[in-house]
Length: 190
Picture 1 (cartoon, rainbow, N blue to C red):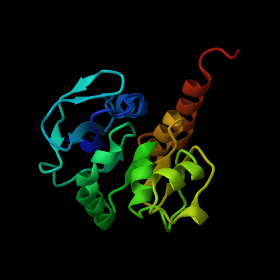
Picture 2: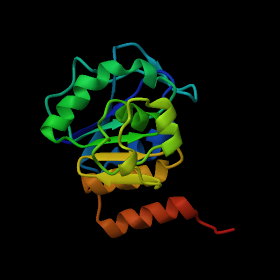
Picture 3: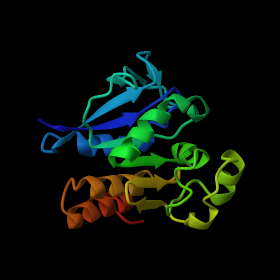
Picture 4: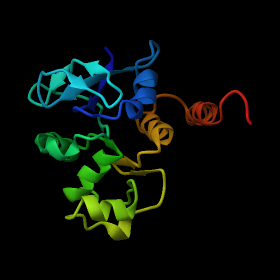
């Protein structure tokens, strides 16, 4: 039986931030499968106009899953109901990966204050996460993997996927690096 990785989506989610991760984890040879979770059973529409019927709601999560991935987008001001799920993941040491405004959400709620992390920028976090106190631990990097939390800025879909693949040990490290270089640089260099 395949292990589940949950991707939290809400209206206005940034569909491209989940694209590489979903494609890699859902490959037939992968030991993982991606399932979506949302606040309720309603269809969720992405920024790009894709409509998704969530597999789970926050009230119907499976007892066991391998990682919670929080995708950025325009709806994070209305997603506070996901907080108990995040708390449970932290308590159970289930890895969390957050990109773009999902990282801002974690910053606002203090989850990043004591660990190395990144986000859209330090100034962005100061402006949009007024309760954030982790300034000293902010790193100007595309992604930061710290214990059980991966953070990324909104321009780092490939780097974010690479860190998730590493954390889940989806393939050997050399293969992950080769995958990343292929998609980052393409077939042809200009």
